[in-house]
Length: 397
Ligand code: CTP
Image (cartoon, protein in one colour):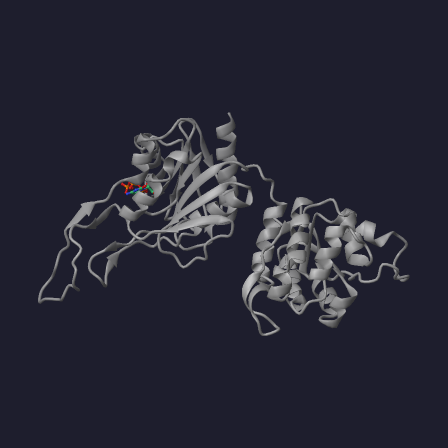
């Protein structure tokens, strides 16, 4: 989402200025052009050479630097910026921006920017909580800035509390969201992801190979595009996505409860989870001891959550399921689309290279009652975006 975008990274004079170098590097790797503007105080913490080495672009500090090509530098920077982030933003810079002061290169440039603007405050907890700083941040919010809440933890001064600059990966997520069209704003969406675990005894369970990556990518993409997203997730090793309400569950029964108790108020439901079809008929209270000879398990059916949703679908809700097959993919998936009363099913064949569990890519076919859209090999993030595009187009028509 940041590929080809120009990001203006403002760095002010706080100890967290060193983290801005990691952010610049991450943005460059994501394909963005990064213009760094530093305040004179930031030079006490990190040098322009660091940023120039990373961005391969000249860093601006002095509004009246006479060694530039003739152009009004701060206006040129402001005009080419697609996004602005000030990270770290000191209490002083925040106060100046809130007042519209423009007494150095950074504040002058930001005042001239008309693109989305983000500030990431980083300072001592008492300074952050001071009513003056809070008042200034509120002013910035009212002026259309996105204020990124600082993280809590041990600060450079030794205090423990709010005021840390969030990790660069989190700042990059905020930038990605700011660069996304908010074409799903106002849409309530529920996504399920991951496997379920069906307990046998206090030690063991039955599960499957789902990593949750596809469902998490959908939840993240939808939130980036402005939807209010609830992610009901079975156990995975993934970080819960930012801007998403994540509801952790373990068994198919818990997923059923979590999904059906929220389903009526959703505009879109996408069921990417790999739900167990069977669970042990009896869950033993004590660990099952081994005996001589073989053993067998009695299993019973779990509830089919998707089928239940299809049968209780409110008017206007868009219901999308997933279908993982190893043979007769289209035929079986079309049958599931009808049987579960879905608006769309996302089919993939586990035997196709690059598709399915664990990997970062997928090869899917989107099936509706009258269309079959084959997508090429894409990253799961790209599949998520394409899927949301198709759902959005069908909801409108
Ligand atoms: N699903 C569900 N509840 C279940 C089983 C599956 O909601 N107990 C959902 C999955 O989240 C997925 C869709 O149903 O969106 C398809 O799952 P899949 O296992 O491929 O299909 P089944 O209908 O279970 O058919 P089969 O196992 O025979 O392939």
